[in-house]
Image (cartoon, rainbow, N blue to C red; front, side, top):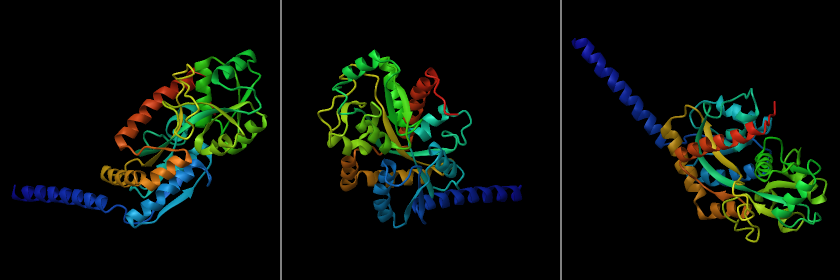
Length: 326
């Protein structure tokens, strides 16, 4: 009995010691370089967001935060690498709707599971979508766009930043809500699609302000409506879809930070706190807004709940329209 009692006490002490060590490690996090994977090439909105946060995060923590661009596979290459990394918080990923919401409905054999393999840290920012057309199109409102499209079913085209991108699905949402038939032309990124909308090769596009601001403000394309709950401060003259009679058309690229599943809760909380603090710094906040990003910075639980609701919403649309990328 004496031996068993001592063994039990030793075991309890061991568990307590491990728990204290884990908490101590989390409170000191990070203690080495953090690798931040971005599933897009350098220069885009997700890359800008990561680099805007990474530098002050590095200064705040005293550790290097290395932004590593890993494009390809509709974000799955970077997602798989994150999913297979050691779950210690030293490999994180910029994940958008494609990574965390769309891909699992668009691909039957996805190489990662966004729910089981990736752990939400925080939603960093929203990139609200904007419907744009060529300035030579003679279309000046959503009503006119819908009217012309209905008069020419299947004859007009819209561009996107790629099949399965937030830009693609945002337009599919408008098609469903407005009952229009317009053909999808996917591009490799927003830039070439924008150029073809400006040139009239395709008639329309849903684009985020971060990518399209230069074209919109210079008059190379015409903004008709924003797929947001309210008008954008940067484009106060552009109405929302709700104002045009399409309340259900709300869409944005939602870019968050996720870590490898199994990362200790204390580490996730520590990382969340530090990233949110950086997002709320006035200089960082302003830089994001000026670029066309709506800063967020919520809790892991809030981000997880948002993703859950987004999956329900978008998976239904993808299923109803029978959209697949396999």
